[in-house]
Image 1 (tube, rainbow over the protein chains, first blue to last red):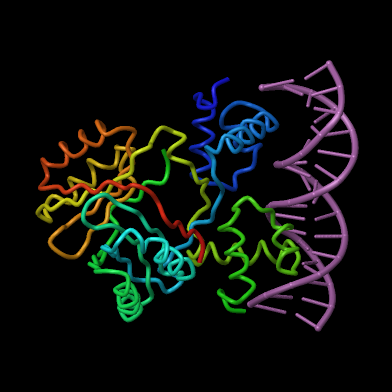
Image 2: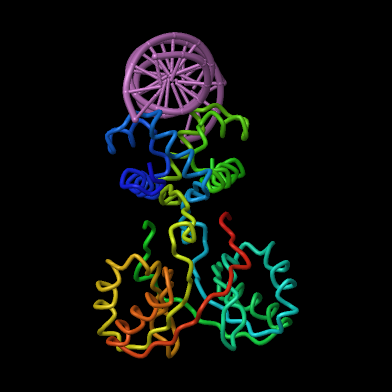
Length: 144
Length: 144
DNA sequence: GGTGAAACCAAGACCCT
DNA sequence: AGGGTCTTGGTTTCACC
C-alpha cells in the first residue's frame, strides 16, 4: 500500500474537512474497518504528512477584526531578534523570510488600528516597514 | 458564564493544540466532567467561535515545496473572475483583497518553479503581477 | 486487512444548586 | 443556567487470524 494511495487521500480530505470524525465514520466512507483506518492514520502521522489536528477559531469573534501584512526590511543579523520578539505577540500569526528587497513578511491580526500602530512602531526599531491592510478574504482553500 | 471565561479559553487552547482530544481528556485538564466540557464546546461552535476542526498537512510531504506570494494589480471588475478561476487551483491557498495600489494578494504553494511560472502567466491575463518567493517560515503561531 | 473482547467515550435523560 | 451522575450504545485499542 502506498502512503498516498486513493484511500489515504480520501482519508486526508475527510480529516481536513472535519478532524473530529471517528475512525468508524471514516471507515464507512472509504469502505474499510475502523482499525484499518486507524492504522493508516497512524502511518500518515508517523510519516509527518499529518502534522497535527487543530480547531479553527474565528478571529473576528475574539475581537481580532483587523488583518494586515507588514513588510519589514532589515539586516539579516536582526532576524533572530525579530523572531524572538514576535514569539510572545499573539497578534503575529506568521513570519516569512522572503526573497527580494523586502526581507521579512509578517502576517498580522489585531484588535484595532491602535494595536497595529503599536506593532509597526515596535517593528521600526528593527528596520523599515511597509504595511498592507486587508479588506477581505476572497478565497480560503483548506484542503488538498 | 461568559463564552470566553478562563475555562473556555483553556478548552480553546487545548483544541487548537490537538483537535482530537476526547471530552474526558479535556475535562481532566480543566477540572470539569465530560458532559460539561461537551456542552461548553457546543456553545462555542454555535457562537461561531470554533469554525471547524482540521488536520494540518505538511505541504512539503505532498511535493508542494515552493511557497510564494503573488501581488496582482487589476481592475475590481475582474476580482470575481480571478476568484472563480482560483477556486479549482489547488496551488492557491488564500486570496486577500488589500488596500493600496496592489489589489489582490495570493498565497501560493507549488510543486515546482515551472508550476509557479504557469500560474503567473495565467494570472497576467487579469492584470499585472509581482511575485515574492518565500525562503523559509520563521514563525508559525497557531493558537490564541 | 479483518475479527472479537475489554476499556473507553459520547450523548442524552435526569437531578441538584 | 451550569454542572454532576448515570445509562446506553458507539468507539478505540489490542491481540490474534
